[in-house]
Image: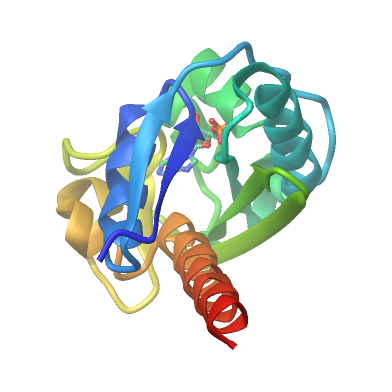
Length: 196
Ligand code: IMP
């Protein structure tokens, strides 16, 4: 069952791979797309994702999504949060482990906001997973801070998991499940309206 085709504007193939696995369950075919990126500075992932999605829509003119995500570390008052991508580029996993040296409170959450823009429709779906920052980097899968994040109820980091395993927990999977459920509901209501 193919409900629709949806474009994900990102340069990150890992994000696409994870999102694809979720959306397939809802009959949505996800296709990676490129567009000029507009990344505003904001404390809100929702606002960052929606602004970027609107800008991408002006260029591509087809139903699309843009996702923005970040790692929020409790002991660092939510840092790097919306600045995660910048912090990752500048200091990486080792830099964050250094910041956390001697810190007993390892609690952290990943958050994601997925903005959907199509003709006459704008929606944002969010997802979150909490867990802890590992003492050292482990695993070689995934991307970004995956090697140092252990979700609650697990002993392995995200980088030690397959895409399917990471999707059982991840912020991204949770946001994309919400998007998938919404798409299916919309599809059914459009179908029953046109039949009735
Ligand atoms: P952006 O959403 O592309 O702005 O990137 C946010 C940054 O947060 C990425 O560069 C990663 O470093 C980090 N990040 C977001 N989601 C994940 C994830 O699922 N695993 C590991 N790191 C992530």
